Image (cartoon, rainbow, N blue to C red; front, top):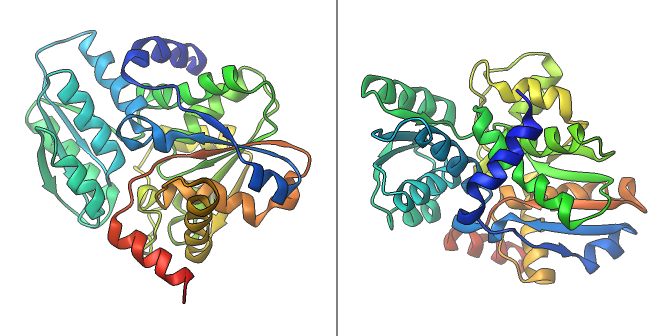
Length: 321
């Protein structure tokens, strides 16, 4: 599949349903790293994360071929919200399965939509396997959070926008969970022959893609609790994102929980921008290795904004003790 062509098709297909998110220059981070740092603010996207791009592209692609269909998905939160928005906007019936650890903020956001919500499992892979079985049994269409070329092509529209917004990118830092976001962004930028270095950002407590790439196969390993719940959990067996990450991702940076929380506090303090744990991974990664990026043009993908008030209070209180 030509992912550049698919990304450009997705750009046309979903454009009226999404916004072109700002690329904001960071004076503070640029000075800290002696480089030029830009924040790609997907936390300001419709539904509060990049996930609307992939979900809407996949659903519209299905509707191009058949109309009378019901949709099912599974997600730790942001994909579920994008799915809920998409099905609601298009007047479709949708059911979502969430892992039991899903954050309160994301659950509350979902309750605003006409959507059936169910909980299953303590890991996103378990939840996804169960939701797939339900969809198959009911002859519904399952919308994967990441393991689908149409989803990946939707996420790649971030790179299509970046091509318009910034003349040269030396390195782009992207959060990784299942790998759909970085597969889309990385494949597009590499295939249009840019020199951008693609760097994946993961929490140490749930670095499944990193460990899988290192091992040469997808690993079934447990994840510890992490503030980056949007990237937590395993990777589906035979996921297409594994090979795409192996091909297009140049390097990985792993983050401690403390460094992720520090990044959340920093972006609130210096930019007055609300980010969730997963959204702060790129900032934390840059700060951890800022000397490596000296004199470069750097893009940090800020993937989402959904963080509960209780968690935010805890993070901010920790900074004052």
